Image (tube, rainbow, N blue to C red; front, side, top):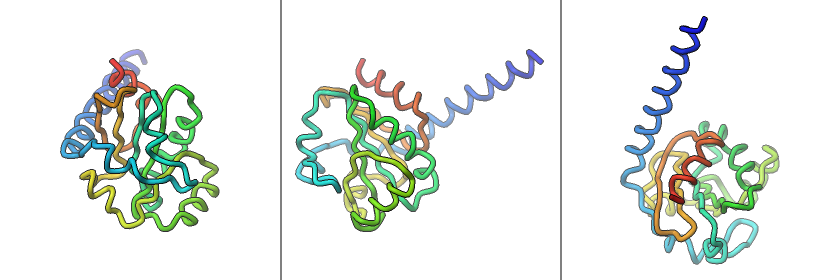
Amino acid sequence: MKKWIKELIVMGLILIITSSIIGYYRSSNVHTDLKLIENLKTIDNRTVKDILAEKKPLILNFWGTWCPVCNQEVSTLSQLAKRRDITLLTIASSSGNNSDIQSYMQKKGISFLVINDQSGSLAKAFGISVFPTTLFYNSKRTKTIKDSGYTTYPGFLARIKLVEQ
């Protein structure tokens, strides 16, 4: 039994490492310039420039209501949005109008800041081709980590710790 548990742990670690390498590779050409979004507003009419000015680590997540992996991750994003020590900002790409996104979020019982990228032009400007893709910025916005694919709650927090170092 111990050998079986040890093998499961090793396989899990290999899966996590492999997934991280793939996520890093898929997001290597992603741009991180926040000036691309600073003059926008969220679907609840908050000014993005004010959100970006918060002196906390920032998680910027690109997702879509149509994306199966994103649908698995949105509840984690909603949990992260409740934290006071980080700023979570998301960009819903090609997911309809503001009302469509708000309806989706209400049905899922989730809440977080969303910029509507109805045409997908923001995702394109950032070089995003895989969803979800997440950018992690330190509190000074001088260091970033880029990742794509599903991320767990502990995975989000670990990347924030890494970017803050």
